[in-house]
Length: 334
Image 1 (cartoon, rainbow, N blue to C red):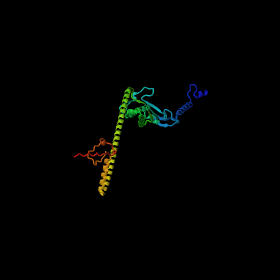
Image 2 (cartoon, rainbow, N blue to C red; image 1 turned 180 degrees about the vertical axis):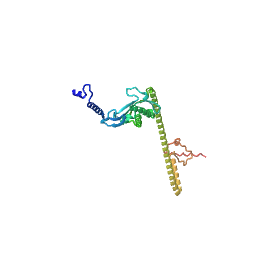
Image 3 (cartoon, rainbow, N blue to C red; image 1 turned 90 degrees about the horizontal axis):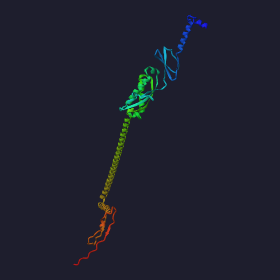
Image 4 (tube, rainbow, N blue to C red; image 1 turned 90 degrees about the vertical axis):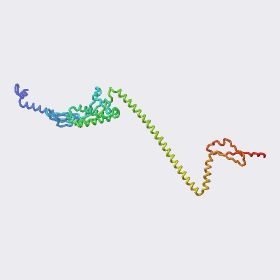
């Protein structure tokens, strides 16, 4: 205790120079030791020299000149961040953010979320004053632009994925032009539909559109059926006409060939050919007609035929009806 008092200069005395140097040296060592820091695996460290960017450090044990000369900012670069537009779950809806005008001039209420992460820590810290606010502003602007070029029906039905993809691409393009150091992972639409105030009217419009589409489909079906039937009738008539034409041409060709053959035979034997043609013609005519054979030799009275002889008997040849000759009348006495 006495030795310590002697080093401090004793009661009422001044501290010795050795002690002052020791204290000052300890303070300098503590100040220099405060420059050690650890960067976690999911972080990237940015070293600032008098407030200006100096360098970036990877994960591990690192050192920087202690404050106020250098300062370290640690930024998580692998963690995913989420920004909600139009209100999040459990929060009040924000119509100013979510209500947009579609390409067919319809009002739609869209709530969506943007998932993003830091791609470059130095740009993330210095390119924008409020990175998270910048992401939200760019997300709302990009969604309004995409929705303004898209019809209402695809947004609320099958075209939602395309809207999300186009919005993410437009956001990334805008943030890259700002050199914000942010990478957009995905855009997800949580809900999309008409504003609550016009839901009833929107349903009525949808019902009317569905009725109109149903009527149009029925009309198209009827039109197609009538057209197909007309085409079938036209094709059938055309085919029948072509078949008749072929038949007529072939028959005419056959008749011409037959006439040529007959003419050739006629030139060789005219009388024989005439007799054969006469006989064939009479045979063709008489084979389908009623025939009555009368042997009137030695008869002087009129011959009376029964009425049924002249009735039609069809195409079949009728057998000849024999008629008995009338008996000769006795001569009057002179």
